[in-house]
Length: 400
Ligand SMILES: Cc1ncc(COP(=O)(O)O)c(C=O)c1O
Picture 1 (tube, protein in one colour):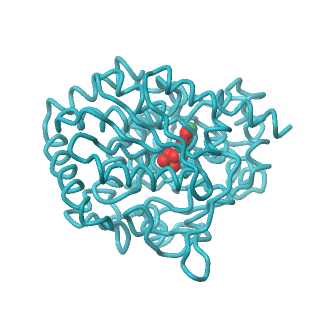
Picture 2 (cartoon, protein in one colour):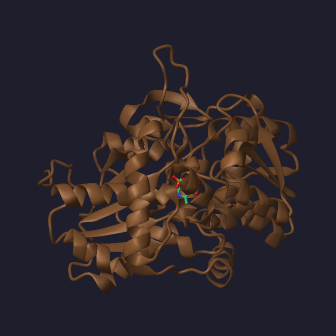
């Protein structure tokens, strides 16, 4: 059975549940790591399974997300933009969390887990710096050390976030190899983890990496989708929006959002940056410990991603997204930098909300699809606004 736009009807085939011991989502996922890291990944998996089944851990996480991170985040109608587009657009406001993006949801979960495992230090990679800031924040909160690996190019374009991390007490390590962006920061963080696994916990920032990370990070971000589902039920006459839209770097805000709606009739749309569109232009391959869709050349070499949004500058996509794409439960679309800057300004001018460049990707597709009639007038759209745009002001100034 198909929906009018040709999408497969959702999705008993894909419940976004536990991928089991192999960590597979269809043909994707798994654990492709050096032998020395296999026990470390197994230790994280065992610890997460134990913690996730423990009401005390869940309760502590919920309390911190509430009294510290500011959850639940509101679902804000974009009143003026909705009127202009002839649709109902609702924004899930992850930009209003402490530290200004959804990354905090995952990091508080993993930092609590690290402490439960007796680790004293968090290692992290970061692109836009939002995951790094969230890691530095959670480390300070829970009395852990934090070391954050960041590409030298990203250090230049996200200098404010570098300063924030340092003020929060984290050590920021510049990575000068390759394209000097997120991919290279991930390589370096993994290399470092191999040599320090006894006392360090690798806190991955998206639904990527070896099993259990893609599953665990999605579970820590599920709170976005679950809250939004309840808020939509209260807000919308039909209860469920026609479209659920989120931007995709590795895919964590989208995975958390989709998890709340995968068993509904909502069409799920992930929006990629044109220069980092692994679900659209990639081929199956292995990157950073997992199998997924990866941008690569004819020889199978991973190619560089390029996006105006540092957090989307990643040549792969989380393995569960590759599976959601293959099973046609979600659709992945591409927008370019110019549309993104226009969308960011549009939202700022109509709603008084300065979105992150990453989040503006999701909006750029909504604007295009509503203007072209692909999203029909009268439709309802729930979009995750993953973060706030203060960090992007220098980039915006340059783009003028
Ligand atoms: C505000 C914001 N949104 C989205 C992303 C992309 O990450 P993900 O696809 O894991 O949600 C980032 C990454 O840094 C970000 O900072």
